[in-house]
Length: 123
Image 1 (cartoon, rainbow, N blue to C red):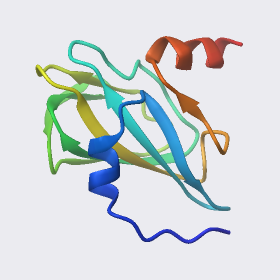
Image 2: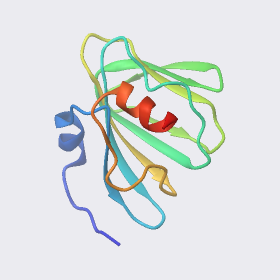
Image 3: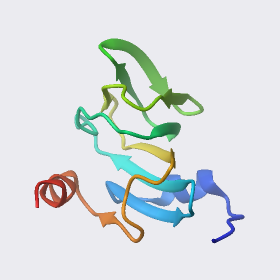
Image 4: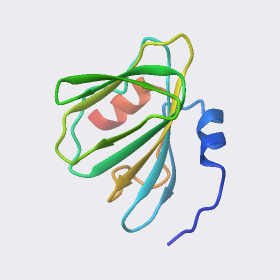
């Protein structure tokens, strides 16, 4: 099990990869994300709970069809089984960190682009 004591907001702001796992423990996982302007995470549903904290940019959250605005300092909780998507509606990258409980991604996961993430999920 790993411990973590770092400036998570700064790490998220500096991250330029679509998805980058930075910590995985038995019951939780931290993943950084950067969504380019006009792009989105992609509609998905997980079997785990997810908490997303947005640190830069602006966009729209879609949870089971309900839409709401997201921006820096917004936290969104996505319970397991909720269909969701996050869309960057701004002119700069939408930066965030996500906590999965339990872990969702493989430890060491790095997807530099959304296309790379989609290919990994299909492969």
